[in-house]
Image (cartoon, rainbow, N blue to C red; front, side):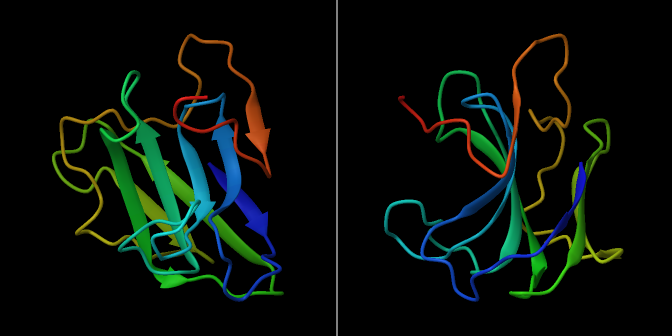
Amino acid sequence: FEAWIRPSRASPTSGQFIVQLGSLGWGVFINSGGTGTGQCAGKTTNTIGYYAPSATNCTASTFSKASGNVTANTWQHIAVTVNKYAATTQVHIYINGVDQTDTATSPNAPTTAIIGNGTGSLPLKIGASGGSCGS
């Protein structure tokens, strides 16, 4: 997945979705650290995050984040690649062409990491999340 983004907030109070597949599918978003609703505890604000929840449990998910930040009010190119056959560091996150993968959070094999729709027919939601766990 890749996109040009221009975040409007320097310190978002909740995660900002860039794309999400369906209601509970994989997603790419701008992290908002903290413990409140819509925030990712332990994650750095303004980093790019990727997740792929399991089919039945939102807490059992694959998660990866970038070590570099995105900048508010500036156009930036982001890309997320997934190689589910790689033995280590399956998810890579690029900001402006530079690999910013936080290897401590990138999953190793085996994993449910995916980019794409497989054989399904779920809508790809751009600029918004498809829903939340339990909804």
